[in-house]
Figure 1 (cartoon, rainbow, N blue to C red):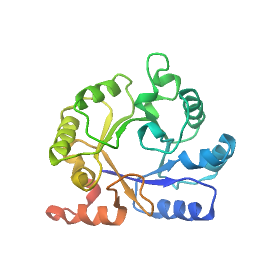
Figure 2: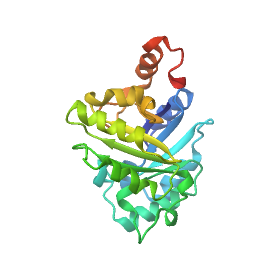
Figure 3: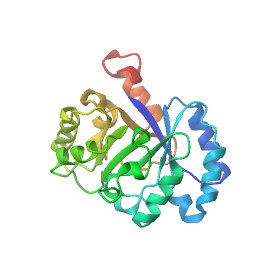
Length: 231
């Protein structure tokens, strides 16, 4: 599985220190959460900071998580689309919320679908219509499709993982059940065709995230497997 470390980007020395730690870690991707920084800085200042970062060969994922989907950015659709168009000029991948695109604003008018993680989040429950959500994302042909939900029972976790396994697509897939109930989706989601998970270095960005160190230990210890990433 791809191990992704989320970091809330800002201009402090603490962030830069944490970013360097992420670059030196065993993660594969670094997600830069821009919610907080864009509330305090201009768009130009944020872009200048992002361009100054050296990921050391790791893939960067730029995410503006809005308050519609559990984030901190309160922006209109027009503002959201404008910011994402600016981010699409940077090297790396861009997260796009499924709820922010549609017939009037298709995905390819905002960013390159081949560099997009198209995402859906529900921090309250696990929707009954998971198959419909997967198909809604499939229509845009993104690089990866991501569903993250809050299970109320173990059956919700099973439904999510089985829907991921059964969804046929040329895109990559990420299925995450948040909270302690959904730990199996973060540890062993690849057994149901989920390609990635999110791990912490310091600050969690969603309920139930494991630290990268814990994730690697648990992955390498189960069934005597030598490498968590190769499972």
